[in-house]
Image (tube, rainbow, N blue to C red; front, side, top):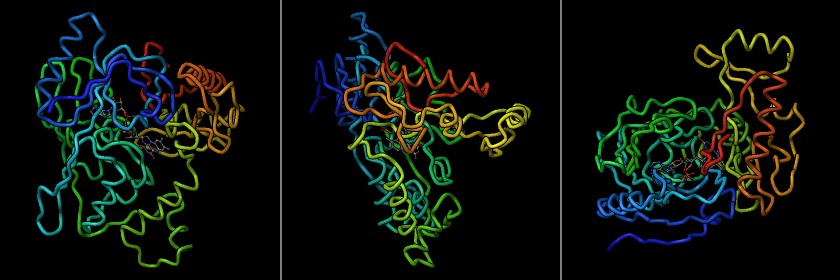
Length: 349
Ligand SMILES: Cc1cc2nc3c(=O)[nH]c(=O)nc-3n(C[C@H](O)[C@H](O)[C@H](O)COP(=O)(O)OP(=O)(O)OC[C@H]3O[C@@H](n4cnc5c(N)ncnc54)[C@H](O)[C@@H]3O)c2cc1C
C-alpha cells in the first residue's frame, strides 16, 4: 500500500493547542508492513543533512510546537484491538498505538473488563499513554500495564518492554529519557479483570455517583462519572486550544517542603513516596497568573495549570508565558516547575 507522505504539512488540526505550525514532511504510518520503508526514508532524509530524530505524533494532545519542526514527523495511525489472553478473570487486551485512548477504555468496558474506568476521557492515542504514564483520579497506566512493543527507528530493531523496562514514574517513563534510540511504540498490552476493584476515593467520584443515585456502581458508572466531572472541569480543546496540565506538580525533599511551608503555610502538599508533591496550580495562582493573557497566549481563568491558545498564539508565545510563570514561581517559592507536554522545536523550557 505504501505510506502517505505530505510535504509542507499544516499541523494546526493535529495538535490540541491549535498551533498553526507546518511540518517540512509528514509520514503517516498506517501499517506495520511499512516500517521497513519508514526506516529507509528516514535514513535517506538524515543523509540529506536534515535533522534527526523524527517526531512521533499521536493525537498531539501533549505537545507544544514551539516552531516549525524541521525534523520529519511520523504520524502514528496503526489500528487494531484484540484480546490476546483470557483465563476467565484476568484478560490481556492488545491495542495498536494509533487507536484513540478513550474509545479503547469504552471498548474494554463493553467487554465487561475493569481497570481503565478512572482513565476515561483522557485525550490522545494508546501509543502515547506509556510515554508519560498517563494518570487521573488516583489511577495510572502502570496499574494496568502488561507490556508494549516498540521499534527503534534508528536501527529498525524491534523489542518488547515490560513495566520494569518502562521505568514508570509520575508522568514519566524511560521513553522520556532515551537519547540514543528512537522508540516508536507500535502496540500496548493491558492487564484487565472481569472482577472490578473500583477506586472511588479520589476527587469528586463518590459525590458524582451519589448525585446520580448510584449505590452499587459498575466500572462503566465510574467511567461515566469521571467523564462528566472532566467535561465540567477541563477546557475542551475543540473550543479553546490547550494541552491539559502544562506543569507537573513538583516533587521536593521533605526538608525543602518544611522550609517553604514555614513561609507559605497554605501551600497544598501531599506525601509521595519519600518525597513531597506540591501543588503547581496553587503556586501559579499565588503568583497572580490565573486568567492572565498576553496576546493570544493565556492561563485559563479557572485552571492555573492549563495554558491556553485564545486563537492565534504561536507556540513561542505560549512558551514565553510558560517561562515567565516558571521564573516567578522559582523566585517566590524556590521551586522549579517542569513542563508536562513535550516542547517541539529548537526552543526549550
Ligand atoms: C484537555 C486535556 C486533558 C488531559 N488530561 C490528562 C490527564 O488527566 N492525565 C494525563 O496523564 N494526561 C492528560 N492529558 C495529556 C494527554 O492527553 C496525554 O499525555 C496523552 O497520552 C497524549 O497522547 P497523544 O497521542 O495526544 O500524544 P502526542 O501529544 O501526540 O505525543 C506526546 C509524546 O508522546 C510521543 N509519542 C506519541 N505516540 C508515540 C508512539 N506511538 N511511540 C513513541 N512515542 C510516541 C510523542 O513523540 C510526544 O513526545 C490531557 C490533555 C488535554 C488536552
